[in-house]
Length: 333
Image (tube, rainbow, N blue to C red; front, side, top):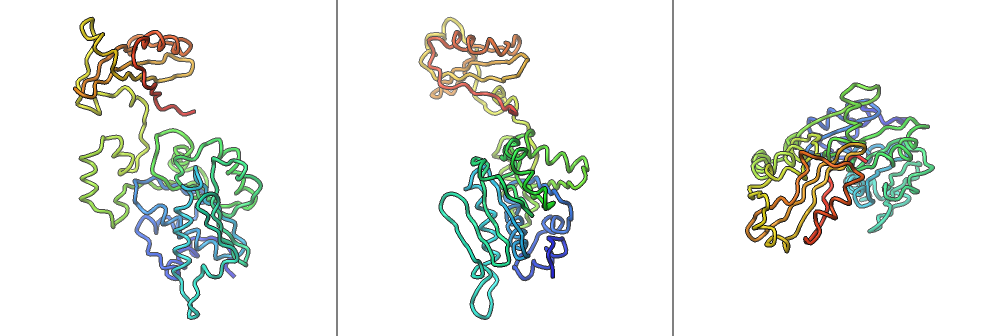
């Protein structure tokens, strides 16, 4: 009797479950690696593939499967794809595989669960509820929106769940910066660490996605957004709070004694790159939305401040202005 979640089994079940994998999906199905990471542009078929894999896996005996997202809501997509596959198999009695479930719960909020009499189940979990991540042995861990999973939650709670059963891990996601847990997974595969494999594709890995739409998005989006969302790259977000000239055609002017009074009523924003034990550059900008002009009130690009002096400096330089927000540059905490 089949009991292991092998590439051979996953390929055998595509026809019964009605799954027609694309080229990259076939590659991943045939990969025996224990830790599989797929970095790709949006709409490339990542969640659909994960849903198929967990649907096939739960038909084996005694398989404990979690789909974990940064919130319960973000873990539902893969879960419901699995439900679609289980519902698509119809028997002569009119029943589907879903009708064989001994337990089926899909509340609007919180954990979704489907269980079968042969001891297998699929549950959704959330990293914003750490207590829900304790005490269970897993055969498969699926990380939904893996680029948004906190490293602390994975290291302290999730990794141990697949230890005793030597369970497998799927981390499929579009990037969200070039640091953090998901970036670490990608690098593990790139470096060929034992048991790890990384796949990197664009949105066009989905043969049904329009090439025309891809090119249109390339024209409309800023470069970094397109690289992340469509080219499937890990894109650095550091420095964006300062790159006004790259992302807008709005004039950027230095203030003088003639413009000081007229900008005091304008909304003011502080751009800050916080650097531990290092100098932290700051820009203070007034925004004239009516005339589409930015005014630089203060810019420390040439004389950065130490972190201990940041708060006092911001208070002094924005005194008398309409301070709206302090925008902090991306930082891997």
